[in-house]
Image 1 (cartoon, one colour):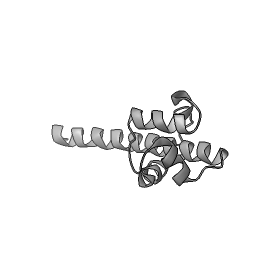
Image 2 (cartoon, helix red, strand yellow):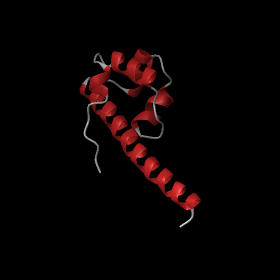
Image 3 (cartoon, helix red, strand yellow):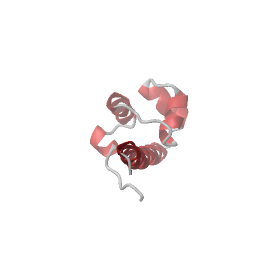
Image 4 (cartoon, helix red, strand yellow):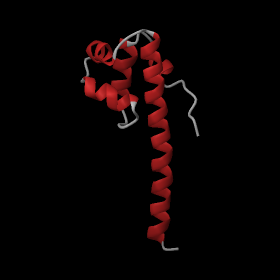
Length: 90
């Protein structure tokens, strides 16, 4: 196997792992939001982020920055640790 193919396989594995984490974070944020009976629009307003971004995060379509996770945590009246405290489904 060529070195190029080996790097491609490594990138694929990293990408798959990251997708699982991003999806798990999004699902956890959705769970926390729903526990507070907030709509995506409510969360977006409180966190001062676009509603479309909330949807993309919850669906695991985008990898949110730490600062975005921080404002989401504040909007959910919790801390950053709670946002990232989840069990990833394999």
